[in-house]
Image (tube, rainbow, N blue to C red; front, side, top):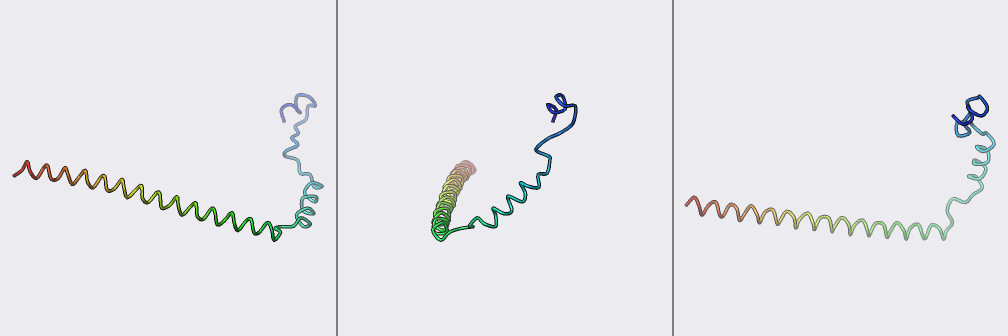
Length: 89
């Protein structure tokens, strides 16, 4: 907008202007263009299955990591409590 103002003396930005012919063209294309073919749907389902499996594996790995970390913390505190009990007796 600043460059147009310097060159022409008017404030103008092509990005902010509404082009009705572009809007009409986009609407026509969206009506004519197929949404998803049978073959495309097969790949979408395959992709979704892969994503679901990867997310399940990630969740399982995260859970296993958290359980391992909790076991380490439990072991640490258990050892510490045993040492404190020996000192107090």
